[in-house]
Amino acid sequence: MARTGDHFKMPDGSVYVIRRAAADTGGDSVEMEFVLPPGCVPPPLHVHPAQIEEYEVIEGRFDVVVDGEWLSLGAGESASVPLGAIHTFKNRSGEAVRVRNWHRPAMRFEEFIERISRTLQAAGVKRKRDPRVPLYLSMVMLDFDDTLVPARNRERLPVQALARLARLLPARTP
Image (cartoon, rainbow, N blue to C red; front, side, top):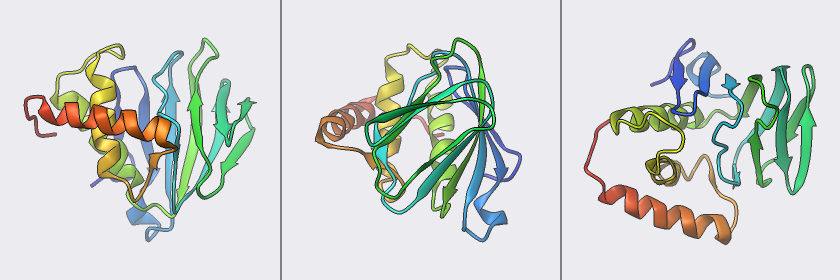
């Protein structure tokens, strides 16, 4: 279980830091800090069926799409993703970006981030262009369907197919 202060590294160089764990808020929220290098791997378009997500840019420029509208946020700017809104984010700035992030209620979001990190590490994935990244990301995403789900059929169907392929790979325990 993730705790305040835990760091989860991804093969693309992204680091997700738990600033305030769900256990410290009674499950009301989880607060994280994302450190995203240029060209980091964005999550597929998705929705949180029972969570509100918020972003606040600490440093750099951060792009987020919410229900089809792209916003480019700079330091001190923020965006909120309402329940069920289709969204994702990218760092297209060419420089690292730091973003504070909240999920309310916390549900299992920090566990989702931890599982992705540990699964990719256990599989020996070391670079963002490794073809196994979308396979494992899809597999883990489907294991957390109470927390986040692919947005529409055009995202859902490929995620389901990739997850099935991932489950055929040699088993590795994160």
